[in-house]
Amino acid sequence: MKGMKNSDIKALSAAELKEKIGAEREALKKMQFAHQVTAIENPMKLRESRKLVARLNTELRAKELQK
Image 1: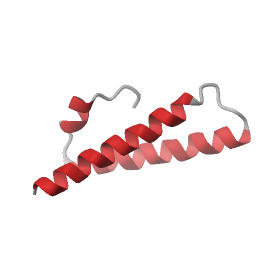
Image 2: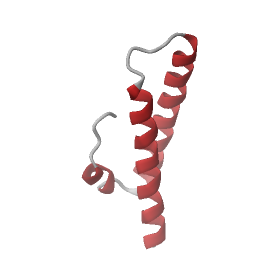
Image 3: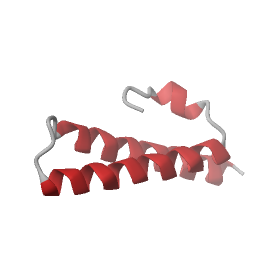
Image 4: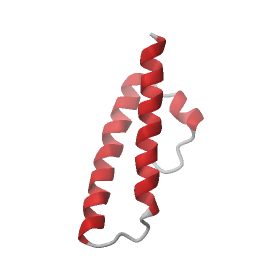
């Protein structure tokens, strides 16, 4: 999911956001575990993934407040 733009995130529905958040969190957990066992090739992917989850959560919260 690398490279999702804010405009792409804003276009998603609340249900789609929840689905993406779940998938991205799962991927982040797997990456963190892999990084603990043996260092992953690009540790910046952990940061990118964490920030993407935060952006998705922020947009989901904004949509909840609009209702």
